[in-house]
Amino acid sequence: MTLLDELIALAVPPRCAVCGAPGGRASGVLCAACRRALPWLGERCCPRCALPLPHARGRCPAAAAAFETAWAAVAYEGRARQALIALKFSAARPLADVMAAQIAAGAPLDRQATLVAVPAHPQRRRARGFDPAELIAAALARRSGLPLVRALRRGRTRSRQLGASRDARRDPANVDFGARGRAPAEVLLVDDVHTTGATLEACAQVLRRAGCRRITVVTWARTLDDRPC
Image (cartoon, rainbow, N blue to C red):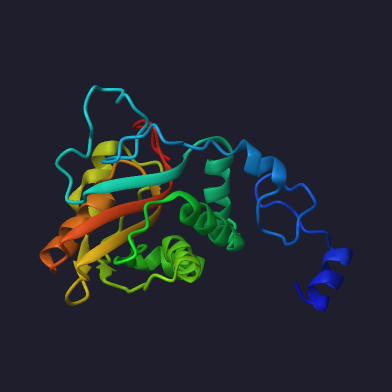
């Protein structure tokens, strides 16, 4: 923290990106109370789909997925949901580093793998000025020392995942991806939230066709049911 940062903090106290409470070293991050309130998923989760065990419907929804394993730090509810909304829609970019730190602390990060972020729709990237998943992946690359490459591109078909039904999320028009050349042999596929898995599955299939042999999905949050988010 520089002297200028300290002077600014004295004049305008940093506030939590989620609850707005003052305190902490910088604005746009989580206060101690919000960190404690995060709904951590823990160890009793399916290594295939990242859902808590036992499965609510008696089967793993990712049993036939193109990726081998999936992991997430928190459930997409409560403070975690508010944090992702703040990152995506209030441009609270420092949250990406917080999320990356929590992923790095618990995720199975294969030292031979390459990080690949799920790309946002071009229209949303322009509107926001950034890509949330790419911010998290870049922060994770800095913390882990793993390489980060842009191995995927996203089609320009208009789509909206926010608030969409499960069927709409799985519509091929909403999951249009392509490869940017040959894919790395081992990939850690990074996204902000794992919902139905349709986007991650589409990306994994593209990476497989481009030569990837092993894919691990890593996200900060995981929805626990079929509710739109």
